[in-house]
Image 1 (cartoon, helix red, strand yellow):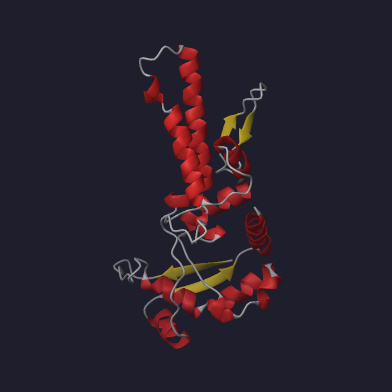
Image 2 (cartoon, rainbow, N blue to C red):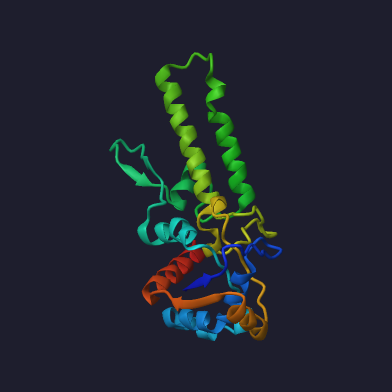
Length: 233
């Protein structure tokens, strides 16, 4: 919902216990009201949330662009494959298509069931099983393609689990937004443990310089809409 710019000495390498620059946590703490206001401009429904239940996260802008913006807004992260319908056209690997390929029920989010389905199919289709077999080259190539599709489908469904943690129902504990980019998105940090406004202000005004600006409300609303859609899947 917002972008924070921090100017600190080149020699500054102070990190907190989570590996994040303490200046980032301080800046988020100091500008929490402005960040919250920027969020409510895009999604007025957020005004109904008590401020003490809102969690904050942060990441470098290049990580946001690569793993979040390009996925949601540009749609560049969607993998494609040639569908076996005889048309030869490439289609996107959506989560619904991934579930179909793995042979699991529509809307299934149970991480254990997804993993079981993947293991079963990947074991049956693994190329090593057909070394020295009486299958033709065409049959082996087709099996290899199917193996690749199964792997792609599993990654599409598993990309949201950044740390592998799931609740008692087998559903990822990560939020939809946090899940974008999957395990490759390593620079996202959250939730941030907020400092008092007084302590954060002292750091922001003395140890380093900082400023905050809200993102385009329409851009933020795109993420809110996608988040609501993901919750319904």
